[in-house]
Amino acid sequence: MSPNLPVEIFREIVRHVLGSKETSDVIGFSSKPSWCRISSLVYSSKLLRALSLERWFQTLYISTPGDIIDGSLVFPEIKKSWTRELHCILHETESSQMERWEIEGFKRLNKIRFDWIKPMPNDQSFTSTWFQSTIPMTELEIRGMEWPSPKVVSSIARTFPHLEILRLQQDTVWCGLCYLCCVPGFQEPGPSSITYKGGLGLPFHYSQALAPLSRLQVVIITVRDNGRGETELRNEAGKNDNIWSGECDECMALMYSDSDYRERSTANKKKAVEKSEERPSSLEVVEWRFYSVPTFSYDDQPTPTPFD
Image (cartoon, rainbow, N blue to C red):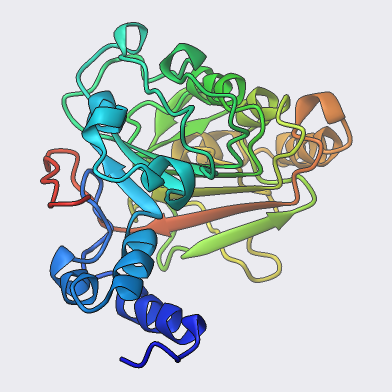
């Protein structure tokens, strides 16, 4: 290739080659393309090698805290300038005994993705002792929690106080009526997504737990729909008058069949938005996404590929 071509053209080539994902986005597995896709670029020229490695290591897949010790990293640029996102695998160890993840050296890091895989601890709460960093993490994604209770959500707020975007993907969600984590169910055809604006949409106890996050703007919760519920939920007008916020189908059928209770409950949900101490003050969007069959397996074990 001609050395006189603008660097931007080479960047576009790399972006095109690595822009799409080859693998399914399965919990515990790297979602990056196969190394075979990048290897030819790495050996093409010095410039393409530098640009390809920079792009490749923007996301770093790690299965143990030892993977990010300086001696384990092939290139010093991984910490200094390349990596923006860590994709971490969590399992087995109780949270109180979790090894520390030394992420202080990642100078441009702004997102962490955690995948919980089996075997996993009973308590999946997060703690700041896991992370030795003053980096203001702005985006967090957590997949595979078995019991996403308000306690766990509260630990997220304490550990990552600078969050602007929070993504949660799990089979169950907290019901603020029975105080259990349940798989929601809706009348068929169920919704693919529901979007709320202006602070509405979170389970009340989630909203309280996340209230300390003054910069939090977006929460996206992906949860399973068992397809056997009586609750009617759609994005169309008149199909979500109850402002559904994570309640299980049993509680919806029992409690919301009482018209007086339903009116009080929906009124309270609207009033709670006006109380800054009960929700993240900057929250703009809450999006619920639903899937009817498992898109991931907790029993799958990660198989790291070279150079992840």
